[in-house]
Length: 459
Image (tube, rainbow, N blue to C red):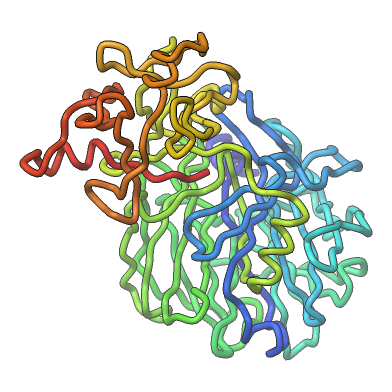
């Protein structure tokens, strides 16, 4: 059996699984957005949710969680919870959702089943079932799938223990009910985790984690058949620990993204790289300024969708009624309140709701904005002695003015946002020593001052 360290590492797997089929040309030619499926975890378990969540994005980098970041479907059989949800567009344009049959952070090492749903449009989920993949005394973790045209079947790839080491197994199916016999799909001779297959220009690209050194790799096969993959890359990693790679082709561009997830709940951060050559060994790490994953999201699945599908999903499930504010020069930090003091702290943080804000029309001027706490309704960010605090609205004119800000183009980046004080208009909201305050910022102010006063309104 795997070592305890291997099992614990595997247990916190947080891939963003994105293997997709080869959908009909009628679908492929209209892709202009992306959908993501995920479950949730937070450091102290206050935001844990072992159910299916959805988010959408136009650019594949900044994500809008749907249904207020609440589940859209929940397993009712097996362990009655899921990890590692995966989205597949089938050949007929409808969808299948696969997921690991696990709930919480206690892991079943001998579970031969996975969860499956059908969906015509990701607006409803039907046909829920558990399907058995094998009869081995091992698990069935992080299932992904792709269309294999040579077999006229879908390949379901997942992590399992073959009696010697952790490998990828595969089952071939036409309906995700009759799953076929299990066989080894990829075994490079060392423990691996979290396989993800991208089909591009007729070739098959498999991303995986090498458990021996903790790096993510990409391999290629001309046929996609078991044991035909050759590794292309020398391995990448960001952060102290990473796994769960995903390969995504950007819509309408010769750009590829490789995503990875720090699996530790107390350091749950998505990382990403970009390349213009899927066959090469050159991947550039993205700054966290360039992307924002949904709050508390873990081990997600990404696939391209049309703009009409994106709009329909937002219409069905709704966009959040709250926002987060990301720091420009510390993009791993978000504005939050702690003991009534406003500051920027690293994500993730507890409780997660401390970083969620309802952007209200300005209390003193509806053309401005006021920031109401989600978990302390009726309390707003306001300046007092130029420091920013979270205080209860006392309905005075002074409070309304102190709690109102005017949005402007970002002082460090016009695509971002800066906030000028309503009643002290030469001062802007900024962080200093990670604590928020309002300070004068002028044409002669330093680049650092301008960056400190620039934020992204996100989710």
